[in-house]
Length: 417
Ligand code: EPU
Image (cartoon, rainbow, N blue to C red; front, side, top):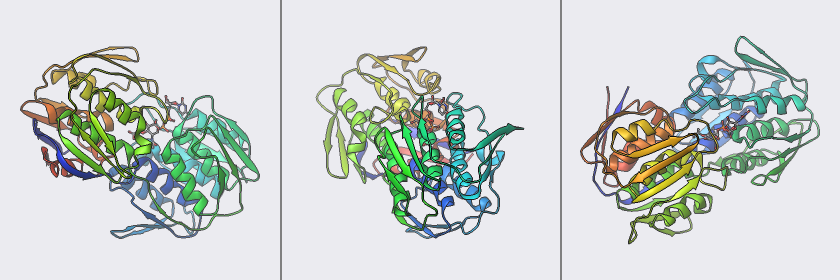
C-alpha cells in the first residue's frame, strides 16, 4: 500500500492539465456493452476505477485494445451477463453495467453494492425504474437478478436526483421498445457526455443536460469515436490546491462553464480567477475571506469537491460553514484534518470551520477518494511533513496526482510501502 509524503509550504506555480473525466469514462465504457460494433474512446483517464471497469468488461466479453491515443472497445458477443461481487465491491460504479446488459441480452446479474465509505448509497431507484420498463427483478444471495425479453419505454419520474441511476436508465432505454421519458433527471455534464456518445452510436436522445430526457428506442446501435470530457472534479482539486498554497496556477484542458459553482465560490473567498476558453488561472487575491456553501446537484458545488474545499476553508479567517446535502456522512476527512490542526465541528449535515488555524504535518489516512484528495490539499499547506496512507483510494480517481502536483512545485512523492 503506497503512501504520499508531502513537505508542505511550497507555492504551486505553473501549468497543469486535467485528464478525461472518470465519471464520464465509466458510464461510457459500460455503454459499449450496448453494441457489437467497435468503439474508439479518446481521453480515457488512467485511473484505477477505469482499470477495474475495463477488467469487468473483458470478463463480460469485451475485447479492449489500446494505444497512447485511446481505447478501442468491441463487444461482439456477451459471454457472461454478470458483474460479480469481486468487481462490485471495489467499485460501486460497476452497477452501470446493469442497464446495458439487460438491454443487450435480456438478463443481468449484478452483485448489490454493499456499504460504502460515503453513506449507504442504495440503488433502489435504478431497480424501480428498470421495473417500470418491464424488467423482472429479484434479489438473491446479495445479487440483483434482472430479466426482460425486451424492455419497453416508460415515464420514469425519479423521486431523487441520481447520477448513475439516470445513466443506467438512459442506456437501457436506447434499445427499448418505444419512448422513455426521464423526469427529475441528473443534469451533470458526465451524463451529457454519455448521451453524446450514445447519439454517436445511433441512439435517439434529446434533453440531456436538462431535467427531462427523452429516449426513443432503436433496434440496435453502431460504433462511434468519442473524446471524453475533461474532469471538472480533478480540475477543481488543482484549483483548490493552488489557492491554499497562495500560488499562481493555470489549469488547462478544462471546460470552465462546467465549473461555475466552484469558481464562484473561490472568487467569494477572495481568490482571483481568470477564465479562458479551455483553461482557468487561480491566484491569491488581496484578502482571504471565510465562506459558506451547500453541496448540490449540477450546476451547484459538487459533493465530490466538498472535502477539498473544507481543507481550504480551514485556512480562511473567520467562521465558514458548509452543508453536505447529497450523501449522509461524507465527512470522513474531518478527524484527519483536525489532527493536522483544523478547527472543524460537525452537527448532522453541517460543518463549522473556524479559521485560519495553522496546519501541521501529520501521519494521516485516506478513507475514500475525495477525503484523500482533501488530505493532500491540507498537506500542501501544512508546516512540515504529512504522510498519507491508503493512497489506493486516491488512485481510484486521480491520474498521477503526485506527478502533476510535483510538476508545479509541490514537494510530494509516492513511497511504496
Ligand atoms: N440514492 C438513493 N437511491 C438510489 C440512488 C441514489 O437513495 O437508488 C441517493 C444516494 O444515497 C445519495 C443520492 O441519492 O444520497 C445521490 O446519489 P447518486 O445516485 O447521484 O450517486 P451515484 O450515481 O452513486 C455519482 C458519482 C459520485 C458522485 C455522485 C453525486 C459516478 C460513477 N459516481 O454517484 O462520484 O459523488 O454521483 O454527484 O458518477 C466520486 O467520483 O468521488 C464519486 C463518489
